[in-house]
Length: 266
Image (cartoon, rainbow, N blue to C red):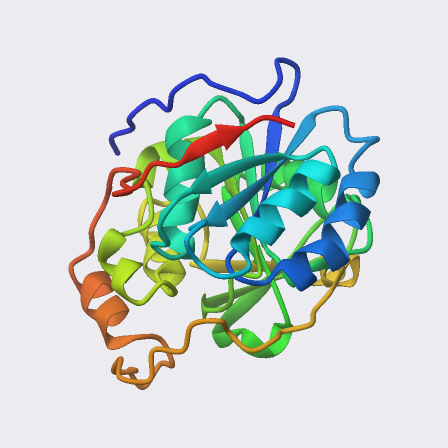
């Protein structure tokens, strides 16, 4: 297994985890949940918070930037939208100095900072480098669950959601970034990326779900701002484009973005 070192940039010197909210054209949702998230992680001295805004040219995103600035949170802003996967590429491509990465959709309401601290602790104790958390109805093709020493269960599945995604830096070094093929859809791509972590032997399944931690979030699941009705969907429920990429068994892809974005410090 080959790895490619991430750069060492951070928002602040002492933080070990980067918590990223990805957003596009949903300023009302961002404003509804961001202040609470900022307040809940204040006691997590090891964490930095960032909002990744995908395209200032998209309606609503300038309003999002103004809200983020008013709350004193940093932002990574691109002029043009390329979708959530490329938005994550921009983050890791510029801020690769953390040991832990969390990516949250803008509609996720965080109820407890244990969402972050427990995922990092469980990753360290189990050697699982990638977890996902979302409405559990999105888990599909489940495998046998595993049990932690304290009795909490980890459900493993071949398909799932990406409302909350956790990665170690080692996982991202090994598998790289999200495939830019999804820029034309501006959504999708997380399943193929999670499969890479699984095939690299860094997780027992593409989707690993700590059941008890689902209570640390409220799931709102609003309609997507992008609904590519012409894109073919496979029987598994993901885009056929993604299934075709998964069949190629890509082992690493750069953190590529046509528009790298600008870091706006808080």
